[in-house]
Structures are given as C-alpha cells and as structure tokens.
Amino acid sequence: MKNIIDSVTGFIEGAPVINVGFKGGDLQTRLFTASAILTLIVLTAPPTGVSDSALRIVTLASAMTGAIFLMTGLVFTARTHYAGIVLTALPLIFKLLIGWQWRWVAVVFGLLVLGGSLLNLTTRRCGLNKMLHISSA
Image (cartoon, rainbow, N blue to C red; front, side, top):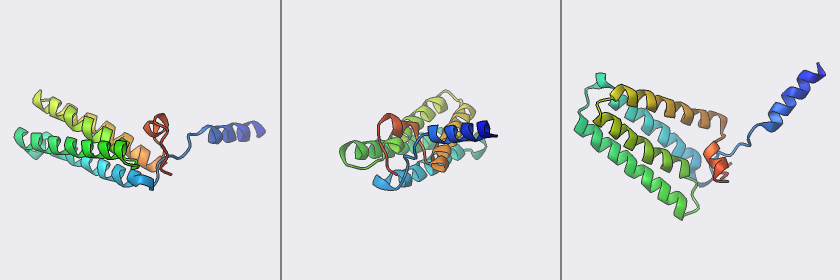
C-alpha cells in the first residue's frame, strides 16, 4: 500500500506547474483562440457549403488576429504568445489545405489543435509557456 501512495505522490510532484492563468490576458485569449478554431472548423467542413473565397477571407482575418496577439505578447507585458502562434499558423495551414481541396483533412487537423487547446484550458498547463518560461498563473 505504501508503494502505491509513494508512486501517486511522486506522480503529483512531477506534474508540470500550472502556468496558465489570468495575468496578461492569457486565459482570455486562449478562450478566444478555441472559439476561433471551432469557427474555422465549422466553416471549413464541406457540408456547410461555404465558398473557397469566403474561407480565404476568414482564414486571413484569423491569421491577422493571431499576428496582433503575437505582437502584443512580444512588445508589451501581455502573455498572448500561445494565441498568437496558434492563430497565425493554423489559419494559414487551413488556407493551404483548402487550396488543395482537402477540406476534411483541414477539419481533422483543426479538431486535433482544438483538442490540444481545450486540454491546455482544462489542465491550466501549457508546454509552450513552459518552453518560453512564461507563467500567467
């Protein structure tokens, strides 16, 4: 019994520190990012019937929003790096996949990124924040 307790205690002590919180707008921009990803997924799904030109406009607007979040995180004391990186890269990848007529691949990729984003929100831990030595908790 003591071995089980020691292994659980070691697992908890070895868990990454909570590094996602309200400081610098980190949590709020992550919520915005998750909703933007979900919007991109819904609009990209072929059954919705959204045209390629409309999707180009939406993806480029999302990428511009990501660039603004990234610049805010780099220039000011805001902690919006995660939202900036995700919202800059993901819409451009979507645009590339839509151009190749691979909408379902874009939807699946978006669902994977959305799952990672929601995991960061629920656990309040982020590997990118750890790598950049950022804590907003």
